Image (cartoon, rainbow over all chains, first blue to last red; front, side, top):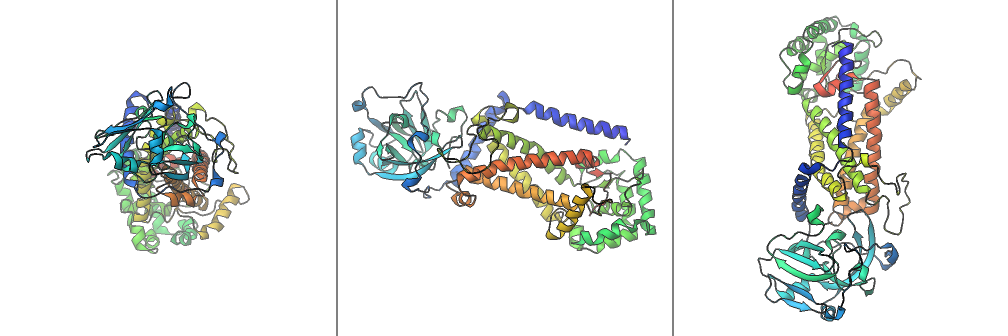
Length: 237
Length: 324
């Protein structure tokens, strides 16, 4: 190995490294890799489902720790806040693979068992916020409609431009999964998903469907608005 | 502990032992003739090419170095079975520094597992940092909404430049991050497992007794001391760096887990001071990695370029040939 060889070798190695880096800058993986990465996300979902405990509760916080209303971001995918034209006519349709499908008005939901907690909200973007939510435990709803044993998933549909989320039954049956109609001791506001939204402190924010219209038990894995675009399906914390 | 003790003998009197210096010559002559051999043997790693093997074995027979190798715990030195002879070659050839002899023999420096994990880590860690910055970009500050963590962050409210991100958008960054975390962890475990299994952690782990030598080494770099302090495979500052970087890797993985599952692994998240602080430590780790990489690469090219070839082919011929 002469000095010249060595110099050429080092320069070559440096150039190769620099060009590899340059090629990767700001890259999203390209058309070939993106679907593979999304497929791998299924592996992480599988691991997440195994890490998920159906009895471990998310920590609750004192009321004093609540995030100011104005600081708690609210979002929807429609161009404007989705609002019902006739709120009195709204019913939550609960059906699919169940023995007793029902359509429930908000008063009927409020009359059902109630769960309230002050918990931390984790957004996939990385921010957190603390708020109090109150609503019907999903379990209570399931007991009422009696899902068939074949129902392994639940699809939540909304009137926010087709926004929806698919959940596994184990996550939906977690004791802290609720259909919330109150936020910080007040009726749910339109920008937080009025009149009813799904909520769980064990899921990332985007899994918690706002502006609920229907709950459908199913035996095939349902997608979801963000999930279909590449966000993790399980989204569990 | 063995390493240091034999260092002085190693550094000083190499010329004194007749047999070893005699043994030092044949391999250099041999390697001179078989110059391309190491490269050829490189990829196979564990099984060096036939051309490279004979000189090693010839030196292994030399009596003087045998003593040194034998003295420290035999189990550990016998550990790296793949390269038993190579270490022996090094010692007789660690003479006084300045007059660089033209014909230095190649010595086996890095096992193929070390080289593989090093380069896998290079690619995967860069990908983890770039996809992590893509994720940071979605919310470029720390603290629960409406509050700020009282921590320094020069990147507060600063979007990460496009060139430093991987994934294109948040979901893309997440998917890269949550894919690359698997090879990152498995690769790290392979490396640490190798070190533990072979005892190769010994010349790498910084311990309290390395503090003095580290100060001496720093003095040398600051020109407060003229001669390079005696060292084994790595000097004390290197030990510090390589120990630190492993701890930093562990911190990154563990804070990452605490961010991925802050409810299921709530105790881990609590250990780091809660979700927001865990996210901060995870982010700080990136800049410590960047700082390490800059220093690491600059030192490779300015102080010991031969170490780059050693990390690729496994064979080293440069300023610090001793092998412990």
